[in-house]
Image (cartoon, rainbow, N blue to C red; front, side, top):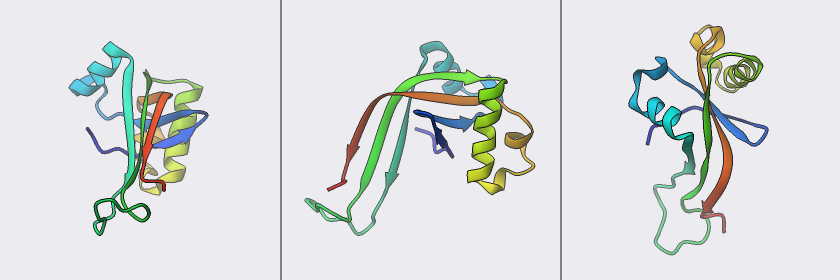
Length: 112
């Protein structure tokens, strides 16, 4: 599991990739075409059996692909910079590979 900053658009999650294939996880994604995204909200005050106000989350399993360039890559990077102003002027804005995870299955918990 790797923390990431993401943008959601058109039934897919997008995140930038640093160093291309330098990481084993990127090589695995290219090899399998699969990835998962976990989005959660942790409540440090949760109690066992709590129905509301506890931990909530969504696990998205999907087909993955690395977008090296092109219109979809550019739009994904634009969305990332809009959501995370810290990316302004970075490789995300200038150009980098983007991971796309298209939703196949969704599992959620804690939403009452």
